[in-house]
Length: 344
Image (cartoon, rainbow, N blue to C red; front, top):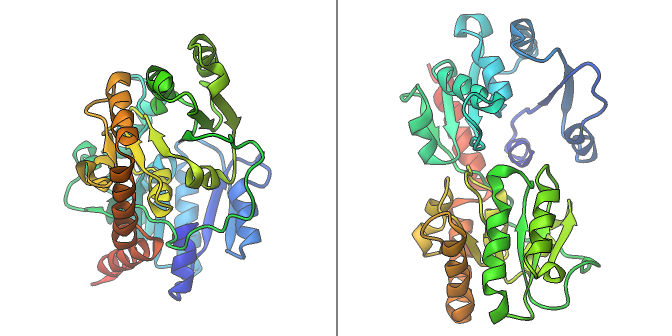
């Protein structure tokens, strides 16, 4: 939606096609598009390898004068990748935002294989993390364009009622296996005795919540580990935190990282996905040497042992964000890519 808003501002005629099943009610993105006056077309169809639906989408786009189909996410990428160019008769750009860690031969693993195998079908494949190139079967049509968010700082109208009175660090994201939030809990627990006024906020929902709450209860620091559930204003917590913790096993390029850089909140992260590149190997934040709890705790200690350096890194991160990771910059790069695809 951020990209769509910038494209509309650039004079591009944009529609967001929101796919769903026939039984789906109005989806969240459709409601938000309505609020923000972005054109959104609910598209209901059967799930699975629906070749007929892929053809219908391409025919609809062509009949309505669109020149580029731009898909996001493995399900839509696979759906449109089923079509050969002669069948779709329209330029196709797909963006791969990353893959979650999953068991071999699981459903998500099969989706990943299909997405990688069909990567030669689109005119261009965009990766938000340059390291994703090596997973794709196709190489020549791949371009790197990082995610971007609006440069303007959010306006904070009030302090959330459940924000701690003392210092806190924050984890923001889906509570799922690949996010490895248990590492953040263990890292916090290992340093908590040195910082008795420090709290850990965990913002998000997901299938791992009960297990994470059990881990927090058994840690001996359950009164200092706060589960807030999902928050649509999570950035207000990031802005007030001592640090954003990213403990993930795998990532593409998380928007929470860019949100923290925008508001000068230091980032402590595992070195996965595109994070190490964005943080300049540690110049603009703190990277653990590996993905273990011990390494993450050591990175946290580096931050708290030298608050002056942490502030300097946060200032540098803000400048790097403005230079490379704004929505304006992302839009410029995509417009150049569209021109490349449409050039004879």
